[in-house]
Length: 81
Image (cartoon, rainbow, N blue to C red; front, top):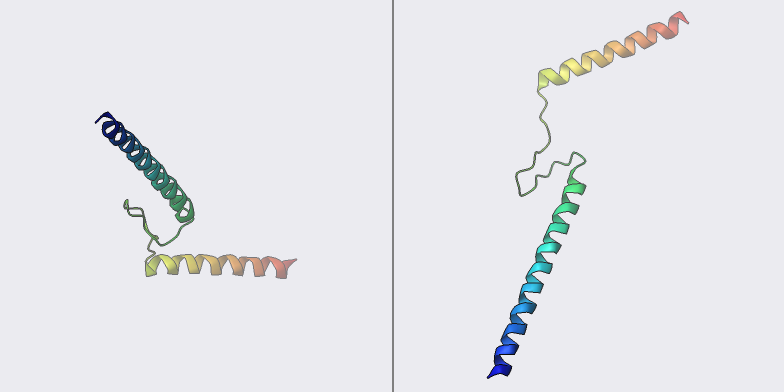
């Protein structure tokens, strides 16, 4: 009877070790996923990560006009030189 009890204890230890290893693998995968998504990816993590920021049409227009003004200024500087 003690052989069976020892076998059961050993199996429980192995199961506990396997569960710990699975948990560590899950954490490693999570860290790697965060690293690959950190560069502004549009994907969201399962934990509720932030997606891409939305830019309104008015905001895009302001940026466009500001860039065009910078280009015009550069052209003026080149003509003066």
